[in-house]
Amino acid sequence: MKAELERIRRQREVAFPANLSALRLRPWDGVTVALDRVGPFPARVTGWRLSPDGGVDLTLSEEDPAVWDWNPAVDERAAGDSPSVVLPNPGVIAAPTSIAVDTPTSVAFATLGVSWSAVGSAYLAGYELEFRPASVATWQGYGGALGATAASIPAAEPSAFRVRAVARSGAVSG
Image 1 (tube, rainbow, N blue to C red):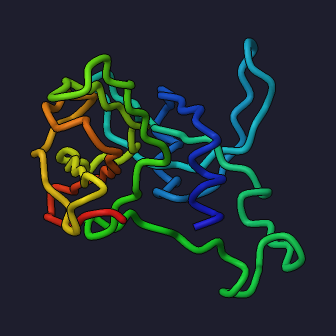
Image 2 (cartoon, rainbow, N blue to C red):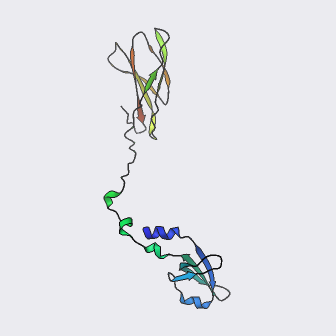
């Protein structure tokens, strides 16, 4: 792979019209290209064809002996030295890190504004918001949304709120 990478880095290619003496060259033979506009560089014959005017058209690609250089100290490493790849897991989604509830202005039924920190996940389908008044033992769901929502709940007593993220796979956060 290193040799192929080094060959790709050398992208000069020359279409060279030659006379019939170039028939002695075969594909992958090494030659030196010396043109007036470009300094001489080593090349390899990558193709040829007979031209209609009686010559040979060569295709020459830049080649360098450094392509084949190999330094074990630089070019080799143990398989354990490769970085590990961590792929996202669609069955796991992070929880929102904060939740904010606007204080109600009346005592009976109030409309509360509830907002939370967004979860950065490509698998996010929405959020589930729940509340629990202090006198009730179970959480009461309020449905899902993708952002802040308003809920009509009794505000006569302190209430707790929680929100969790829901992935498209059905997985939920804490």
